[in-house]
Structures are given as structure tokens and as C-alpha cells.
Length: 531
Image (cartoon, rainbow, N blue to C red; front, side, top):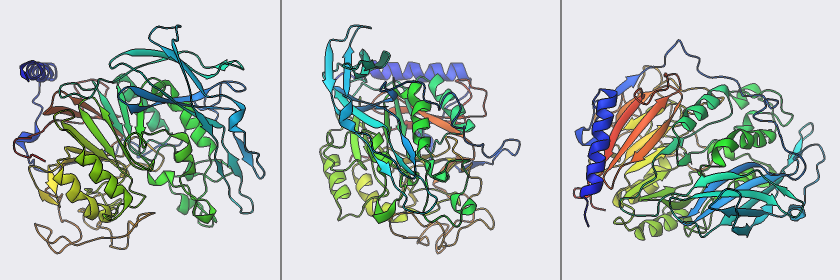
């Protein structure tokens, strides 16, 4: 195979970046890097309030059974799932569930505007959030539709409408462009990565900036709408539910925030596919152990296509990148179903077709902030060796409301063949930005802190290295290359089978291409680190 052309393109891209920005962009080949910390800028606010439900971006602006909250998700390289809702949600002490069969789920699509040569039907569902406690309100959702359209060609624009043509109640025309087929030198132009978005003024700034970057794919790393920062009666959201409502009989939610979030995101995700993974704010417990009802009903993921029996974990290809999305709030033990699925998925992977292997889940394994420190250590102990063995290149997580990028690391030790771990849980939610580090004086959590909502506790003292025998380092860990407390989002540009440019954009920066908060070329070395 001739690799000269893609390498030349990469060389030109790198030189162009250097000339435009006027500064050297480091590569991981120059690492490991000395740790850098940029403290929170005290001139900035640590957070902002939620956007109210009467904001025009959150209000319903269609009537009757016309579609709204339209969203895309990848299915296979030649198919796409389109989701939307119709009808009106109900909230009150007594609610009546809508009949999902009362309206059809149809998508018309084609390669030319106004000319729809194909039609597909799908299915519909509803869900309810019940709270059998005095004074709490119940909720039942609009009708949620999911349709899979197939026969799509790579790198091609498609125009579509969704709804029920018999009423008639069809959406306006939307357009999307399919991703390139899986191949060694075929990649999406820009992949946006965000976590812990919420629905605040800061969230709005993040989405505005992300949209300007014109992504072709979005990774959403959990904690989406933060509907669980409210009482069922609505009112005002709070940064800390248990602090504000210590007498609440259950972790309440105001489910209309999900509908507002869907409307807020529609202008972007009706044309750019968004791949989600669940976070702790999607748990939303009801009585009898019922959890994740909204997440499971609202979002379509390619679980079946990737051989998974659960929407909590799945995989997909985007050009020459294979993504593995893992669930941190379901069984991740090495004897469980998720681990067995992951092992089989990795075994089937052909790195000559998809050289890049990227994993994502919500809470980070490598995190030097006080918030959520070692919270998901059990998952790391169960799964890290498997991912290392198969040569994962990059791991993305959220949960911590700040930014951190590691050196290549494995088992808390610098390792040239370990992944780069990147935490981007800084998209702007109501809980505010995290500013304390576990290695700051007096900021090391106790081993009784940071207990995961679901799963075990495996907090440990380090057995080797500069922090041997301690629970926390007394300085920024050597595996932590860069960390900063700020809101923002990331863009991954995979250039060829070995080079990818990672850029983290801070919300407070004057938004220019040459003013990133963090930027580095991540370089694969398959000759050194063969899986």
C-alpha cells in the first residue's frame, strides 16, 4: 500500500498549523512532559444558572403531532438513526401515558433537496417517571420515535424529513453528511468531544463555540440535561441537590428539562450525529430500583449492530477510528457481560482497517482533582489491562468539571505504550467548575469520600513511585501532563493512521483557531506498541 500521499497531506497540515499559529505544537513523541497546572482565573465566575424553560430555545415551537427534538446517531457505516418526539409531555399528580402507536414513525430521504427517493419506518415508545410520595409530581413523556435509514453512501449529503405523512405532520427538511467508510486513510474531518454539558449560559457558550468548529461527529460523554438538579415541581435548579433539599424522599427530577435540552440541541444534532454514553446524572432513580428510564428511551445507539445486548455499552466505526463506549454504572467486572462483550469486540478489530482505537466512558480513571478522586478505581482495576493489551490510543471521560490530559500511562506508571487519558467534563453544567486538586495542601479526600452512585469502592494507596504508601500525591502526579480549571470543549482531527491533532478550546478565549487552551499531536507507534 502506498502511504506517501497521506503522509504528505499530514506534513502539509502540520506546517500550515505552525505557520498560522506561529508556535510549535508538541507531539506525544516528545513526552512524557513535566506536569503543568493552570489555576482557575479568579476574574471568571465558576458557573452560571440554568437557562429557564421559557427561553425561546427551550420552548416548544411546533403544534400537535409535528416532530421536534430531532437528533442523529450513527448506526453502521451505511446507516443512520434519526430520533424525534411528537405530542405533549404531561406532568402532575395524575398523568395519562400517550399511545405510541397513535402516530407513525417515518423518514423520507434522498440525495437532492426536496426529492426523497427512499422511505423507512421505525418504532416509537414513551416512558414515565413516577414518584409515589406526597407533594411530588409524576411525568410521562411525549412519543419518542427512532428510525434507522440505510443504503447510505460514504461522504454524501442526504436530505430528510421525519414524522407521519398520513396526518400529514412532517418536519421541515434537514440535511446531514455521512462519514467516510472504515479505511486506513479515511477519517472524519473533526470530532467534537464534550462532557457534562447541562443547560446553563456556559453550556450555551460551549455549544456556540463547538458549532463554529463545524464538527462531523460529536462524542457526548454523559451527564447531559441535569434534570436531577430540580424538584419535580420545577422551579430553580441548584448546584447541589442534597445540600438544597436534604429532606427530599428521593433524588427528584424535573423531566421537562430533558425536553428543553432536546430543543436546545436540535439545531446542531439534527445535522451532526451525536454518540452518547450514560453518566451518573442519567441514573434518575425511581422506586423499585428503576433507573435510567429517560436515557434509555430518548437515545438511539448501535448496541445491536456492535453485538452488545445493552444500550449502556457499544462500539462503532467512524472512518479509520473504532470507538468503544463503555458503561461505568453497570457491571464492569471481568466475569460480567460487558467485559466479555468488550473482549470479543477488541478481538474482532482489524487495525489495518481502523488503526485508531478510542475508548470513552463517563468517570475518569486518571484524575488528579479532589472531585471524584479514585471514585471509579474498581473499574480501572477490572478493565485497564484488557484495554492496554489491545492498544487503546486515547481514552475520553467527563464527570470532573475541569480539563486534564495525561502523559501515556498504564497502572499509574509512565508507559510509552499506554493511552493518553483526557478528561473534558467541563462543558458548562450547573454544578460549576472544579478547582481543587488532590495534591493541594489540605485537599486530599479521605478514603470515605467519592463513593460512586453505582458500583464498588476500591480506593488504594499507591504501591510504587513518588507517592508510594500514600492515598494522594504531594504534587501534581507525573502522569498528569496538563490540567486547567475552565469550561470548554475538545476537537480531535485524525490526520492519518499515526497522527491526530487534539485541541482543547476554553470558553473564555477570544475564539480563534490559533488560541487553544491545550494542543498536541497524538502519535501512534504501532511498530513499538503492537497490540
